[in-house]
Length: 193
Image (tube, rainbow, N blue to C red):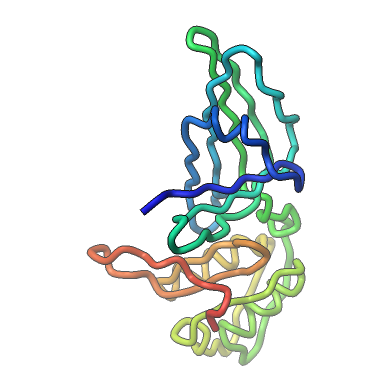
């Protein structure tokens, strides 16, 4: 199979020169409150490549020519490193979906609500679409409170109580049961319920 990567910077597809200089692309998928990361390494020999600005938006999709590509998310450039001998350029960024509003502390509670109800309300507060598995979402709490705690912390706490994972990807808030350690985790799709 033939690996394929598609990259855009600030909504513009990168040039063939960029791809010819691309040494590696590493996307690290992290759960919960930790932001996914991207690390691009390029050959920066003469002529030198254009350096992306800090705060630039990078979208990445990977897959195979034979089966198609899947979006791995949108990232914001937070560090650019230039090295000499050999000339190289390293571009690092963090997921764009970790909204600052998820980190603001709040006080509220829910009465007789399911995990899915709670997650849906929090997701809606941040313009996210909830995607909660039936196994996790069905549990009902008589009372569940948030006291001087961020929404991200509440979601992390709920996930921990239900042996689940949560993450924010492409405008969706995912929650599902953890796979046993001996099985690889499947990436949830936007069609998850």
